[in-house]
Image 1 (cartoon, rainbow, N blue to C red):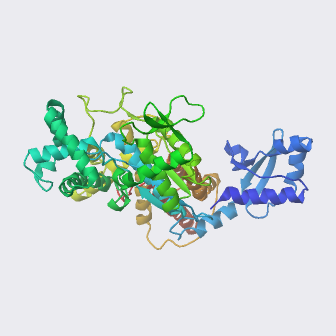
Image 2 (image 1 turned 90 degrees about the horizontal axis):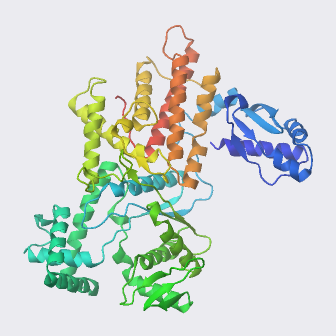
Length: 566
């Protein structure tokens, strides 16, 4: 439910009735409970336009606000702010109406867009490491959220599968007398290291590797077969990680550098034809206003760069995929690169002016010392190892709390451990660096996945204890229930904001508020205690049930599972 838009319509009608012209009406959340549920702060702006006293305008306006339905009361505060309280009866009817709704009251966007979300981008011929975590889960959450709201989402996994390293790997594979189907590729990391040592130590081997790069690019069948074996092995490792993380990326979503390779010459031709590029020191360059350093799109030896491939990808996504919005979920340190590429793509007409281009930047995962997260010996941590460790630590955290069978414990630990890693990342502003802490992310208190999962499990336990069918309306009886019901109805507004701003932490902050308010409700308003009127008992059960449904749906959008018992 879009509460703010409904309130905006009511205020707009009141302005018309009061003969006050206003271009738009913006409703804000109240900063404190004593100021109501919402505020209209637009009177100050109107006072400047109309050259009238703001409090007089506000007083006049409240006399025309309809308080017979959604709104219980309005009040003028300060120099001309209007505080708004929602009606308890209206709240009760609205939350009751969504009890059986699988979407818990969340509608679809009125004008769906075709959105490309580019994320994950693992390195080929290597296993995924912790540096790929943020792009993968932030991107997947954004894609899932947009799909849930009704946009047509196209996932794109841009992988680097072209270049000298593959000539090196193929040459080493042949030197070992192996082929792509052998066990030689099971440990890609070690195979790559061994090949690199050989490349650095032997000029003859290095020359052979470079020859193989040319053969790959010219379509040599034998070299392409071996090259494909590396890609398949690499993607196999990635899919193992995606499966553990519950990420919705498949082979069909892969768009590699090799896919765009045939389009690169056309990119250069376009830039030359419109005189956007020029030769500088033998290289084809684009000089953008405000920057002395050019964007190189083709080296003097004819080689292409990342910018060239990204321009080809942008044109493909805009013109062939017909995207309205293109989101790149990539490290914030690449901000300047994407700013330049986006500018060139627009200026060259590769992307239409109406297509939104967004770099969804994010910070770095840090250790407790504030340094990039690495192994004790300074190496890069494999992502699969991190996820396995999360399950082990989750098992240690939960095994003493309740009696579980071994299978139950394993399942719960997997849900909790993976959820903890994802939620810890998603719960902070994506642009910020964050400290990786097992103790914090596996805590039963605070804004953690486990706190959400435990609240959900507790609600399911309450519902199981009730002897009978839970049928009846939600009746808002006090301020605690009012605040909880109001929060549950704000789910759609929360998701809409998170989708527009590409901020998953907007959802996690909301879920934390919901669970915190539910715990207050549960403490102050006994649900199954004897002596409680049956109508009140059922109402509270229904409110608890809806709370569980919202927690479940919110975590599901974040790619996190729930369990009925922890």
